[in-house]
Image 1: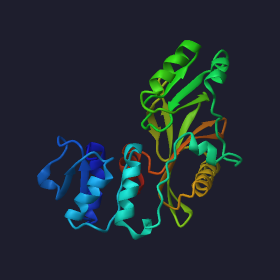
Image 2 (image 1 turned 90 degrees about the vertical axis):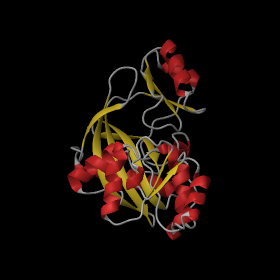
Image 3 (image 1 turned 30 degrees about the vertical axis):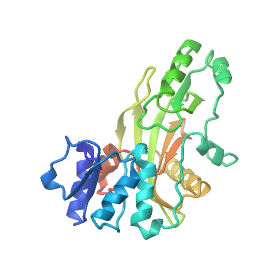
Image 4 (image 1 turned 180 degrees about the vertical axis):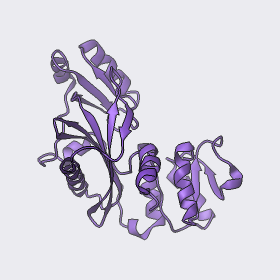
Length: 278
């Protein structure tokens, strides 16, 4: 993509004198004169993108994606472009199979609730409903009674056939960025995240770097590395979302990318000069 949020990372790549190929399904954000290689295409269509790269005789490099929607595509492109990804097998880490993989570990997770369990629990606790593999808080909502629960399930299913139903834990978020190389986690930044109040839950502000105690942040990195090993994820960016309440961590989700471009390509860079290119 090449919206205003991505332009910073493109400028960094230019300063590094890297050759850049941008893929975007929209033309409105593109100044064609400033972009050597631009391909108008949905980023999910990896076969068309690889065909374009072959036509341009581009056979070495790295592919980067800042959202869950293009993860499968960018991993397949990396396998084509980089020898480090030669033996890479695509790993989908959604909110359901993550819990299956991390079962019987000490990584703190919330239990998945059945609809029947949720109907009983919602009478005394709030319930949160999420699509299993959406991104950017789309389709996530809170339920305080059975009528709201029914509505939350309906809305979540608009974004994913499979959904996750959990007991709601109030607290602030902790966003962790990392990079896995040869089975080891390289720390790439931690940020506090604050969520909206009310039925629909989405991030409204944050603090970078995190103001939390270092011991909590180190434990968050430790859990993330353990999860990557358990998922057999050996190379590439990885991020985790936690909720922190009373200094205790609960892992919400993991994805094989960095956090979005607000944090990773902008806030992180302006504060510490860390960025995905470096």
